[in-house]
Length: 391
Image 1: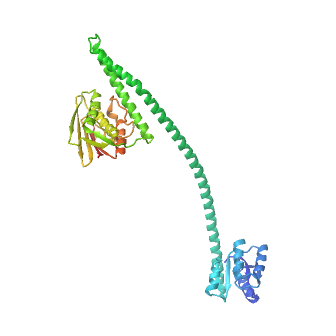
Image 2: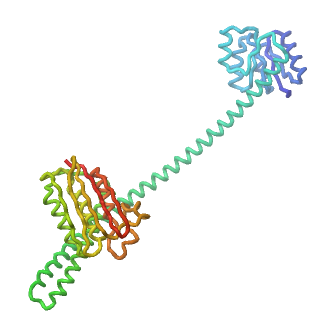
Image 3: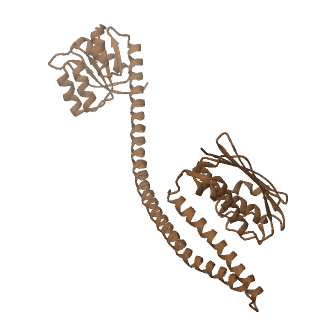
């Protein structure tokens, strides 16, 4: 048992005296006895107490329930009701004031002491919980403010990064477009040199050789710039699906002619074009990128005088292509990086390339809603299988 400072609010002087003696017998200190709510509030103005024993029916204008409401608002002190009434109406009024306990008269002193101890314990636990809640709310407010500031800084950083990326994209696009014109002139000049060399020129063989080198180098650089421009559009979300009717015979011939013009290792392409409609509806530019890059890679990474197989069919509204080579293959440990931008396997050696071809294929297929699968084994070759929905 611990000593408490108690205020008794009871308009029956005999009951108040008996309650005082019982509580003092248990070592509690009685701060005062009030027969009205007004007097009880006056005592609390001067002395703080640990608990109030409150009768419901009091002298004066304030009853015990209203007095308890005022005590809750001003002092936050636990209140134990003492009443001879236990009817539903009284209990409903009492519950609204959130009392610490309710004791029916006449009461047992031992029971009363137990109720007081439980009321004090409950009050202390509630205040501890409230304190923890307040501390938690403060921490949440502080953390929220910190997150808000961090979010502001992150937003600024992202906006800055977006501006830098836009500037970078514009620079890349402008520079790439700027290179296109002089490269076209160089290519035309190289082709003219080859025409002139066809006449009886003493350096005919050398001119043809070097003009061919110039032409091949220009084509390689032009392909690189085309790839850079492609990703410039992709990064700016300007890569769109633009379907149109495609004459498949002319389309396939254009792809094959482009790939064959860049062959330097005497590789041959064995093509097998299945039966298909004269025209198909799809995005020819994206499909061209897919087939041209796959075939060019297959040729580039094949052994000298090797063979690349190219099969093209249409099944149930799906254009299917297979490109197979027996070249250097892709190491197993690096196959998960195959479609990454600028990725080149460790076994490519001195074979030139930008590492952009397959990432372009992947991006185009995403826009076309197509799929790609591959099988590869180092030094045995690679097979790509592509499926593209068409109409």
